[in-house]
Amino acid sequence: MKEEQKQPLFQHHRRRVAAFTRKKFTKPAAYAILLLLSYFLGYLSAPSSNSQHDSPPVGPKIAQNRVTQDTAAADNDHYRFTTRCGAPVPSKFVRQTILDRLFNGNSPYDNFPPAHATTLLRKKKIKGWGSNGAVFENLIRKVQPKTIIEVGTFLGASAIHMAQLASGLGLKTQILCIDDFRGWPGFRDRVRDINMVNGDVLLLYQFMQNVVHENATESVLFVPFSSGSALQQLCEWGVFGDLIEVDAGHDFHSAWSDINRAYKLLRPDGGGVIFGHDYFTSADNKGVRRAVHLFARVHGLRVQIDGQHWVIHSP
Image (cartoon, rainbow, N blue to C red):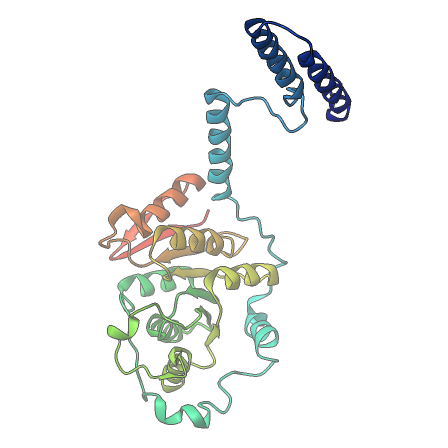
């Protein structure tokens, strides 16, 4: 019964109770009648069980099924990297594409360093981890890459090493370095002599200084953004690599995302190689190694080991 229908009926019964109590009854009988009337009026004034605000109870099995479905949907989301890549840019146009897209068509090394940073930079500060491993020469000799994409650059040690190797082999290789050049919390405790100005660590400028010092400005360009956004954008622009190194975040989620996005950028005609560092770390099978093996298992690929590096060849 709707509330607006109950109200007049409720008032009507109250008037009847008042009239009824004015009559003379014995006390026990009156108490019994009043008790019955109170119960009846309480029943009438109770909210309807058919109210639109009510909902049927959810049993434990139904609730568990919903949780299972939500978990499965969340798990599937980890495998979805759905960005559609653009038509491949010919390797000879890759450098100019980056210059046009990011630097108004000009080299960022022109007139470097700016006056305010000159006294803050070291002439050369090239530091890395595993940056001179044999894997670099092994893969460059094998793949003969025209375009290399490096995810995680820091001060450019491995990028400069690859540029020197490619040059020594007579290759005209363009290397694109993806990094936001912010480092990580506490990195200045491990890497000294990196200056800070108003909260801005000068990693990008020191990287550029290193590239300039090694005369590698024609072969090494940088894409100064986070790995996720940069890899997605290169995909949309159609910038692919023959050889891709992944060496940015070392936790599972960062490595998993970078590997999946980077693999999409291997040259479409096959024969490309993706590889990375920190396969053997204290994280053991909870970081990079776990991400590498999960990726390989999902895509039916084989993981090879070269020193501290993992290597996956595309079909």
